Length: 202
Image (cartoon, rainbow, N blue to C red; front, side):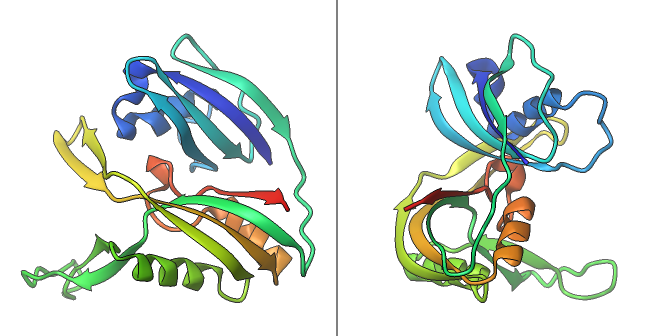
């Protein structure tokens, strides 16, 4: 895997929906590939630009005047059972509920829709479920964040998601499953910078 620091100019980062499309430029000649990168906005200065941390299976190589690579390195993450690590995760904790209007999908079943988990206790339970049997949670800090508003140009509609930043410490119980989870990302809204799990030694 590769870990990279990316800078995106403000004009291309002011709408959160556009950020992942800009990052695609770093992987030229792969327009039809499935996304195999995760990212998290680390710093954003209105009117100036956005710093992004990105994890990818492929080395990023494309860049232009709107998006360029500040640093990139390959890393081979070795995880050991019983190891204690710090972690950071920006996520979009949600649950699925039945459509209140009773609308149905193509199979004739009532549609399910995602709703954000707002209460801190629900958010804590959400991440505990995601880490169950993979890590043992030792400490957790939940940082509330403002809603993330976005616009989809093609569909001419806008929306929002509610992100949460988790910081904490856990013990590794299943190293292989943890590595798989890191590669896949955690939870929904990965195209909006959610799901990247960052680890550091204590």
